[in-house]
Length: 204
Image 1 (tube, rainbow, N blue to C red):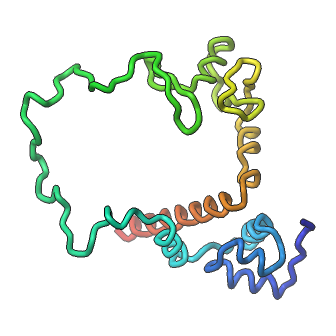
Image 2 (tube, rainbow, N blue to C red; image 1 turned 180 degrees about the vertical axis):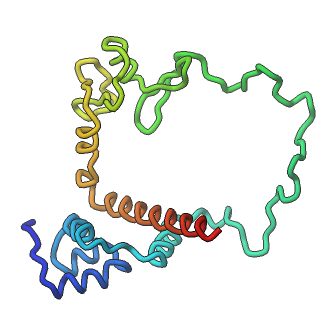
Image 3 (cartoon, rainbow, N blue to C red; image 1 turned 90 degrees about the vertical axis):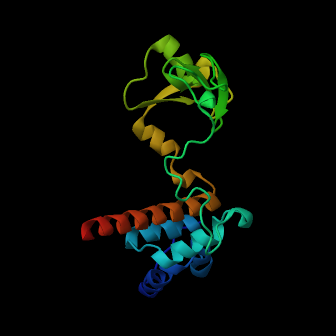
């Protein structure tokens, strides 16, 4: 899509609408892409309103109705601080490991990456492979897959990149528009929460 040329009237309307309007709706309103809406938001510095973010969060991140507390309900563990559940014989003893403790070398998947349990905890298998040949990963560097395939754990498919290149490859602009929208809203919610907490701390 060609570059969007904003008129003064459109900019004024954008600043008025952005706080309470989804980016995809703004893109349709102004005849541009969602990415161009985000770019305009960065240039104008306008943000979503707190009320809009709260309403969006409530509408899209609800738990299951059956598990939600109802008005007037009391938590089952209210007033039980310090209460010992079960007999002494069932409690863990010093040095005892849970039954589900995994041995060194155990492998599983986390967030799409294969991890392996080591003496220092779980580590990414592809990083362990790279370090077995090249030594520890330097500070500020990242071991990544050349073909972006997390399952293709092979030495010739790994490369070391710096923080700048890592950020470029994971730039939000490379993500689908729907995911960019959610991430943008999440960042706005986080900023608003941090602002409220900071103001509350200052008042105290």
